[in-house]
Length: 66
Image (cartoon, rainbow, N blue to C red):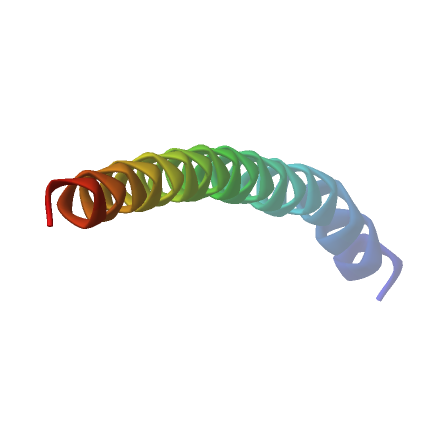
């Protein structure tokens, strides 16, 4: 029985290390993905603001031209 416990303990340590490493890598990938999505949303918002300003200027030109 003691031998079985010893064998299980010896093999469980590397398995725990492998699983922990996997979860750490997965968390890093998720973090990177979220950062990229955040940057994309910032660019979308900036583009929206620029388009809105352009439309406002075009409307002003139309009002002045009328």
